Image (cartoon, rainbow over all chains, first blue to last red; front, top):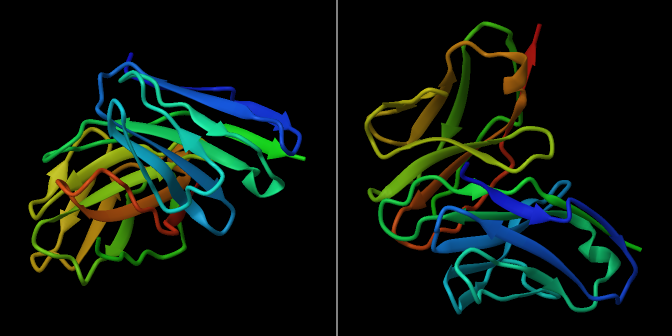
Length: 114
Length: 111
């Protein structure tokens, strides 16, 4: 079954404690991205990757890091989480290039930073 | 990417067709119209997309006006499980894969 898998689904952490949210897709997609969703602000893109070792900033990259060492994985790293990073996070993947159609989204990670 | 305008909310009776409008008056010739939906707090789900011809798949139909300045997503027989926020997105297919989500339309299907 084609899917994007995020872990963990729920996480409560303390300010400053480094954490990683994993994302994996099984569709051999070139393109992967991370979004955060906040009430009243909608879905905003954090980082994206067009292929292995190629990453770029989205609209709200501050406080986040990503890496793309393998095609299937695209972890989101918060080196020093702060309460304003409390949010619902989604990973997405799709084919890259002209004719790209649908993007597949993970089920989300609800992060609370206290 | 062109900006879209959608009503913030709509109601629909179960079993009836749900017609969700989207205005994209500044759309350019190479921009596609995409529709996604988000059920509660799940990940957004792709529904359908089109350029200028009407499109239909197992989930919905997409009607694009001849001048391409607006479109309508049609769910032919809405069920309670179609209650969700529906996003209309306009973008160029070969300019990067970022999807810019606006406020969407919150569709409430009622028994």
